[in-house]
Length: 605
Ligand SMILES: Nc1ncnc2c1ncn2[C@@H]1O[C@H](COP(=O)(O)OP(=O)(O)OP(=O)(O)O)[C@@H](O)[C@H]1O
Image 1 (cartoon, rainbow, N blue to C red):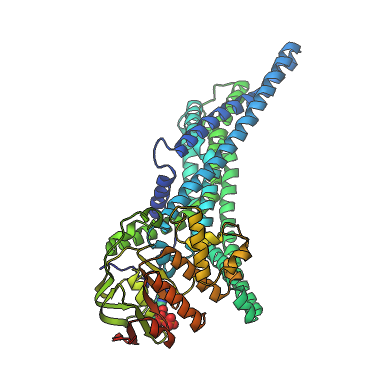
Image 2 (spheres, rainbow, N blue to C red):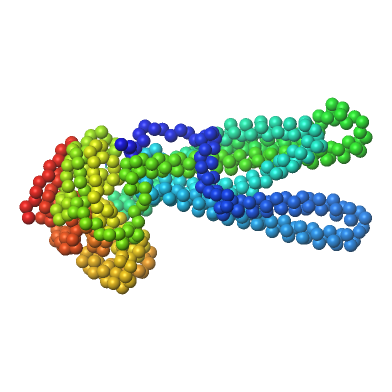
């Protein structure tokens, strides 16, 4: 059986500018440019056409001064007027093309970001990948940061490179030809040699930057997470008066981040030196290229006038070709950022694909996400069991000790089961194994009913409240009302809010569909949250409800009321809890005794 567990002890390699980078870069490009006719390819093609046209105009603008000299020297007034008009037209065209170029780059950035983020979301929300990634895998830091920020920065940096990169093959080819034509093979060979040396030097200088940028983004994620932790738990922290300690811890994370940022800047400093040196060396190189045939006597037969004309022409093409290359080398800093982000996104994609593959090996149904809304019309399931467990053993991910060993049990309709045990004996883990969040160590667990409304629902220990209106809280995890029946549905929701004892919420929100600007976790008491989860359960009316300490914040009386309501609605209950008052609502008791031991007893009515 495959393992969806921590990849313990596996230290990730330090990201570099290597083959792995190329592989990851190509797989990201396949996401950005899925087909030849995709929107992104078309935009890229348009950008190429615009930049080529722009180059043509720039060339025309470049030769205009010499034309001005000519008409002014010959005092040609009509020619001067015509030239002014022509120059004005060129300037308007040029500025329009430049703006269009920037606009297409921005559009490409948005479109790339959408494609990449949607691809990442597609894997993240497939089956239980988001759970495995955040809870069980330790080999990948901050998946949220990678999806929300790193993907954005990668697209931004790539779009910044796009218009400069897209032209370079054309300009390099054209000016190489021109250079060869004017200087023979000496010019292109020495300029290409200069470029190769420059690139190799920059690659060495870029190497450490990629790894440090990767580390910096991790620390950035950790820093943000710390703030999010305080935001979500502000009240608990305030009860502890934990401002001082949290201040210290948050500052510590900031210091670590800033230290890495400083080290990144030091490494970038050496790269800047490399880039700038090659920029200025390029200026001299053109004269060295020209000087070689002069000093070897190739042009000895030319007069000084002819020689200076030749130097001026040769200098122009050489300088232009060198300029093409130095522009490419200037991209080194952007490229090292792109490499860092590429590694972070590529690694995330690989880990998610790995989880999906293992998940599907383990549980073939996990490939498709549950779509409760579309399953509503599915024929009613008439099976009278929910789970069959056969010699089931399981342990927690980090430990080798079995929490439960060889448990055989059938959870059938009408037989309410209570699971009890000391703290940490594996009660919630039992539900994790039933829900296939964790793998069993041996034996098997078979779910014989379907998941969702009218089937089986879990109420987790920590109530989960989504963002949105009161209606959206009650119908969660459905996207739409159920059944799609307008006011009839409203009545059902009101009735169930009443039954769960929280109809007062309706007044606070101002209506079922009223948008609220508060965070539900901040304004509801733990008891109200638990009641709201019961209203949700009543609304969804599953045949089986698995409740993990779902009434721990309520009085025994309220607990009794809610349990009776569940039974009246025809639900079979599997509950976890510590309270003895729960006994009377159940028919069987499974006690987890620790060290793998367990016992099942019948409860007298
Ligand atoms: N994600 C996890 N990774 C590693 N160990 C875990 C994880 N979740 C739980 N455990 C460990 O597994 C053991 C069983 O946990 P479980 O949540 O099932 O306890 P429980 O019986 O429900 O306890 P309680 O009564 O406090 O709710 C505990 O020792 C816990 O620390």
